[in-house]
Length: 193
Image (cartoon, rainbow, N blue to C red; front, side, top):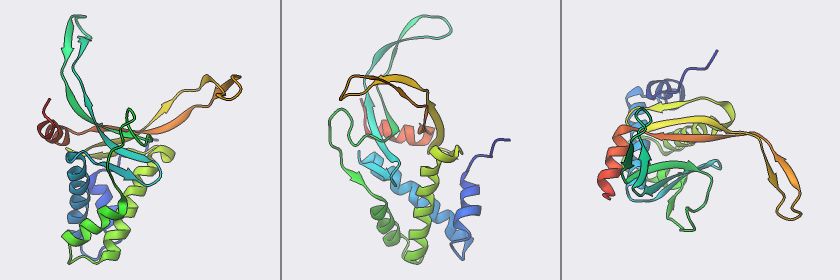
């Protein structure tokens, strides 16, 4: 049986509530971390997620497309998306980045009534939950923010760059991020095309 998705409510109940002594602080903490991530992305700054990858803003140009039902040619409009990637830069462009420690310090300053150790523990737990999507296969669904899910790159043949010999590249799991409607609207308003 498939594990149920991690929603805002489940994250608050199972991760934050055991850390904080006040359930009202739990919701405030989660909203604050999501807001810090959104602020960084709106500024065009990548958000590093432990050692598993980063959330990065990508600007896509208009391109030709096709209506899948009718087969009619239609343009796909230019848009801004967020991708979860292991790449350190996109198309050779070095981008600024914000780390977990910077997010922790920003939240601690913003929520000075919550002890630093609670903020630190929660942010680490939340980022670990995102990092574990790849290995554990669970989903994190946060309305208006986005969905983190596990997806696979199938096994394929490749070449050893040193010797040129054919090698089998094993099937590999990775994290996929699908942008939520609210964050998507904010990004497209912040980066008009």
